[in-house]
Amino acid sequence: SDDEESNEENAVGLSDTDSYVSEFSQDLAEYGADVVSVGINGPNAYAAYVYIGNMLAYVAAGLYLLATTNVPERKSPYFKDYYDMTTAVLKVLLYSGLSAGISVAWVHLLRTQTRKVVWMTTLTAPVVSVGMAVWAATQLMLVPGVEGLLGYRVRNIIVIAVSLVLAARFAWSITQRKQEIERSVDIIQLACTVLLQNKELYAFSLLLLALYGSFATISAIFATRLPLFSMTEAAPEHMWGMAGFLFVTFAWTSAVFVQLQRIVVSSVVCQWYFHRHDPHEPLVLHTLQASALSALTQQLGTVVLAASFLFAAKTLHVIELCVRTVVSMLRIIPVSLVTLAIGRPLHMADAWSSYTLVYAGFSGRSFFASSRTVTQLLQQHQLMHAPVVSLIKSTMTCLGLVVAIVFGYVLGVQAVTSMSMHSAFVAVGSSGMVFALQQMATHVLVCTVEALVVCYAIDMEVDSCHSIDVVERMARV
Image 1 (cartoon, helix red, strand yellow):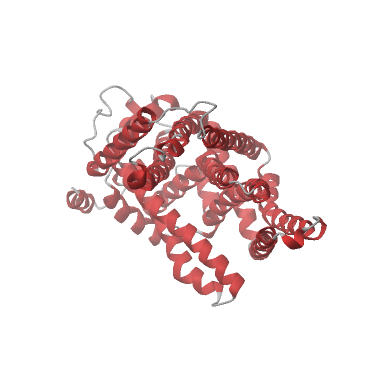
Image 2 (image 1 turned 90 degrees about the vertical axis):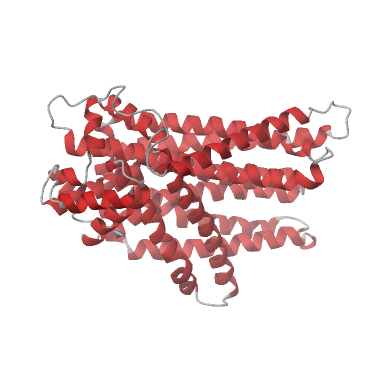
């Protein structure tokens, strides 16, 4: 239990590295069938069982949609709706695949041209925002007959306002954080060096991205049957409930994929950092296999619990962005007040849940036991909310946000001009999926940085040094 784990920590006194990096991490050095027992019997197992039950219900709902609906014939009046919906879903998958390719290429380029890519990514946000505002304003002036298109004018005015607000915000942030951006380049270079020494981690991230793409494709197939399900007798009572359940489960599972990557990367980086010079050190691939097996069995409950916090935090973050946009446009109250009341607590909660799962990957302990230890550890050394780490996360988010906005704007123009609900679905769905895949593809770098921060904090706590390069660079975060 959590109390027993805390008592063990107090008994040991947390006097050396081994009291922070438990036998779970050290056992990975002897990868084998007996190292990690297969079975969901680890900490926070209740969360794993709830999630598995929910996924079974998700699959059952999808199979029910496939079994109770039939593809209409061409002569049927429902064929056009089904065809439009299927085409829209295929477009979303196509644009999502394109964005995933862009993300993978960006990460590969980042490993070789770190400083240039970081600065280009940082400057892309204000430049693209200004470009979108200019484009929207040009459309208002040049499109013939625009005076009679009220919806078109309103949409362009909103795009101009939001783009200028984003451009001003990004430009101000860059001018205020030049030194932090330079320091973030050093940390990203460090993370890329670690990934080059553990190339299997990058391959694992690509595999996880492919699995997520397969899950998204299956979910898209289920979504294409929703219009047909609306024509059945049960539709009036269950249509929106079914759609809501599928969407929430898809978003929750997306968070599980993100946290699964975080805990596996953390376990491998921990093993590399503390045990890479040990005699008979196993191959990175063996460590990766053991970590992935543990994450999918013993630690699945911890992963699901962390994913639940992430899902809730991201949902509230979307609400916060909407509130900030409205407030900045209407000038009701200062935007800084919204950031202080909503944004700051969300930022702190996100860092807390991320580092908690990182330490759970180090130690194999439960979510809340890991939370107590790592929170005390990082706060003691002022690393919980390190500005440089926050900037790195913002840079990764900025990349996904810019690409998603560009996709959403280009596709949104088609939706407004065609007045098609399916085109609007393509615009919204593509933007969301583009952002999600961008985050998945670049997440391996963020996870590596977070793991190195905790490794550095443990070294500081026990007055040790397992990597001079890591200690020197982390001292500037």
